[in-house]
Length: 445
Ligand code: SF4
Image (cartoon, rainbow, N blue to C red):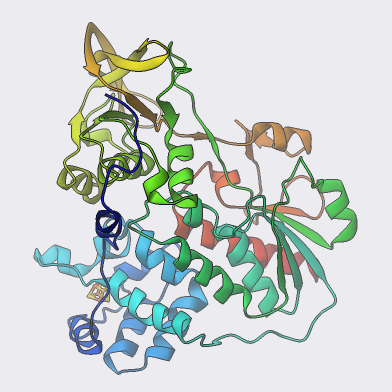
């Protein structure tokens, strides 16, 4: 057993990492699906979208062959509507709320329709929004992820000059660096960022990191307001012995590497264990399997009932051939000659509900051992607590505390997205960016 790259033929890499949700192939196919929509009054699909996209309206526009109008409807509510159509867990949002579910019929393919219009808009560089004359006001945004980009676009439309400071060399945040490659390609992320900034008045300065080569004090002095959207990123440790062994990696780094390098250069083991059952765990497990790992086992300390990922995501992992072990919690990682050889897990049972409302796992005292050569930890991410404290921002367990209008305790400094909520969906970050922009506009008045 060994960690190896180049496990596949060249054609297999492109085959295994191709779009998992292919688009409509023809205009007619999109129109036929759009015509299934009942155009509900008080539509539940719209209510369940965090950015409140007017779903029946944009679908009606597709049905009446008004693709530009449809893209405008989507992007006015969610400027990352194209990316969200690929990565949103729609089964628990818009499509999960579609009335067809109540009739035990297949819900309208809202995401696929949304993708249809918005991809055409990006491909054709349709400028659907205009920018008001420059107001003379300047805003700095930390982070070119979904919250930062959404905030920037809304401010720019109002004539504010925006500078985004981004620590990476590309924009898009989680979309670019933290999501399985078969959901969204790096090229698409780049195109989407360019499309958003093409409105004008938005400059992105890459390789600028708050706390390293960027200081909040300096930004406050130079700009009329600052919006913090630096996300979260530090992987939570398991705090068990053996984490230092070769072959133990965190899922965030694993996916980051995979998104930033040639797929063939990414090494995986023969027998991989992935700890956790959130979306990142599923992404790491399916990517490891598709990179050529022979066996991938997801290990979760609770049961399917309590898992954070959706059933749809779980099914993707199962279809990829990943094995699931429920009610098992990592106890120790064992190595041989400095390399991982086994993962010892405690066998759990469910006890009373904890503060999250889910039943908590309790050890049975028994253990099981898996033979592995790679362990990927996907036990969640931690906020940048040191950054929050250093900048004297009010914090709650490392997350920035804001009022209901994105305002922090520091004058002229606003915040939103994952650095505030601890990590939610891309679509939640887009809405946070809109809320932040609205608060900043109010402040600048
Ligand atoms: Fe159309 Fe379903 Fe939304 Fe009704 S709930 S408007 S049928 S997508």
